[in-house]
Length: 611
Image 1 (tube, rainbow, N blue to C red):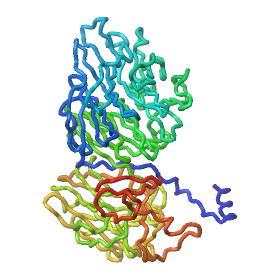
Image 2: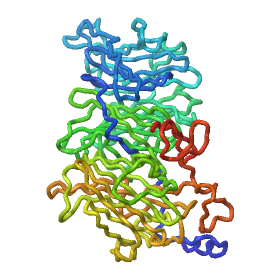
Image 3: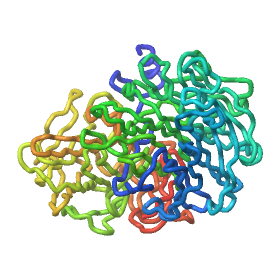
Image 4: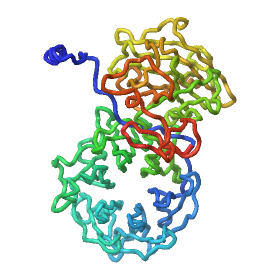
């Protein structure tokens, strides 16, 4: 550090401090509780994909293999039918599906003979194909057989199509280990769209243990095939989500990952994710390259298994931002045999078996929070056309942890930062520890393990009052509310309340709106339920650590609006400030515009959204 400070002095670089650390750059997923819907009234092990015609297609096990379709993004499902029937005392289980580049849909599944076992009925992997968008299906196609007893079976098929057109089918395989309880991950290949298949080859095996439940992906840059598996050989006494990988060039040619191979890795970064053991991992890639992983675990849930979802980097490593899309707590049912889908241009769909039904919910991965230029009225009302990033004020969505749905949003003008939050809560508490929404903002974008002097905490209770704290000596210090230039309002409704605030830039230490400057922000809701106080924050946010807050920027100013902020010598204002929304022709539109728009992402990709 001494040498760094000397170099900084010599070359005029900004000095470093011990409190500054690398900023958090992963997306966080905001789950929208209003999108939770039933896909199948009964069933298990469900998977969903988006077809090339825009519809969603789901598959599950339920007295055989069932399929269903949705033409409205999952709000309702129709066309349900059984494409594989159970027969000969052999249930068909654990389906997966894929649509190939030529439009062919392939469904794979796992015949599992029931007792009494007979040698003519084997555990196996089969597929069916449809070349007319799921209306009709081929006869059953053989892929693999294991033995005929439960202890020597094969399980859980999962597909991956490569750019070459090769279709791969991965599965858990006990077939080679009839003298012990070991299990490997095997792979069969098809070069004709799933009509014929190669013999199974081993791609992952830890001697003495049970690699299982594989889910493969190809990374965005097409450098590696990564397979999420469950692995009970890490010494935790349970399965733990794990990845095994190979390069696309190698493509598992004369290669498999053993216990000591560098290409076998714990999937969860224990520095950011607690040691939540459990199996059934599921891995997907977002359009801009980040990865999402789920697994099931009873961690901190009174022994009840729940679905947990994390976001990883473009190499399917460094997973962070744990969320439980279907909630947690003693009153919630278990969520079993889950899966993920990525639809549209980056919406994540979580799928879970809950109380015998198949349910789904949508989540919105977000790296960057933004404020458009607008002049909202501070009156505790969310009025159409006020100019928040979303017309309904829902850029931030919370509620899966406390069960209290919260939406929040931002806007700005040259004088003030605007913030609004609506809390859907019909048990409001105004005394003692009142229900409240707390806004955190650091106007200098500090990345620290403690609050800085540029950090502010603004508490907005349902009562309409406010309290303001500022970082001083690396801790929060209450400051004079009357001397802090802000306006706020709160209004109670029969089943919700709204808090709204306008905070002067001068109160935050800025002469004017800091367009083009990186800031960070966070939001926390406090819900007092008859003396039991629950809180929920943006995923992975630690309210005392600005490093964990989300990046926050002001959108580009409209033509004719000037700022007194000093620009970088190398970056123009228009380059530095993100633009909020475009229509399909690429034209800038109002962030409150209805219809189909494209939102800029912080990584340069654009996200289509229907408002």
